[in-house]
Length: 298
Image 1 (spheres, rainbow, N blue to C red):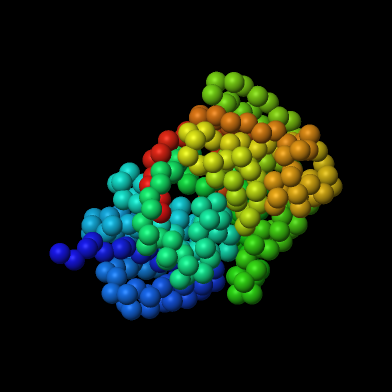
Image 2 (cartoon, rainbow, N blue to C red):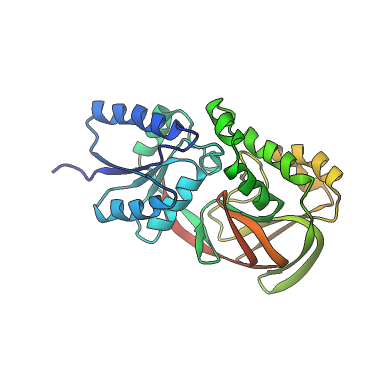
């Protein structure tokens, strides 16, 4: 009896067209190896949620997201409760999810990893009724995510295979006009207040924003959500601190507060831009809850 097919949800526009290039390269491998597969191609933002559900209904052995962190976010929201494993072929600008899982960038090497079908459990995070697989954040990082997603330079840098630099450009663009604010956090019932807060990052996995190691101790399978708060400093010191975040060395600075918990509530004084796996949203209150071992990943 022929084995169940693999299911691929492809975002052709990820990485300014890299999504389609990666898929075409992989498809040639699948055909040559006589691997059964089905493919669904997104036509508009948000559609990957529905396509992932359709793939599961068709009985695929795994759902593989071909795209960036936003594509992974949508696919997970469509299939996380089904028990079907998730795979990912990186084709976006940030690719922080695959960076944390150490999935290779090159399509052939990535497929070799996925096709071995070694499954492991991963925690998820429910944030305001949305499922987050990698990280969420409010404040400066959410504002930067919004600016980058709307920008022309993201598409240009992606074409140059310099997608990570888009987030650096976005930070420099946003920093001069962002006003830090007071934030109240409740971590597993413990109340904390932070004045002059630049950002609060909620991390299931260590990386976001194209390789920033914002929560270097986040593990993704420990039933805990890692929190990084940046507060109490001016823009000049924040900018000086920024280069250290890529190696996780920012955590040594007194402006950084690291917290861990299973349930996090964040309240801010006004509705604020935030992001979930790099896709931006607006809210004044954020509720986050860890869902232990809720997803199987390849």
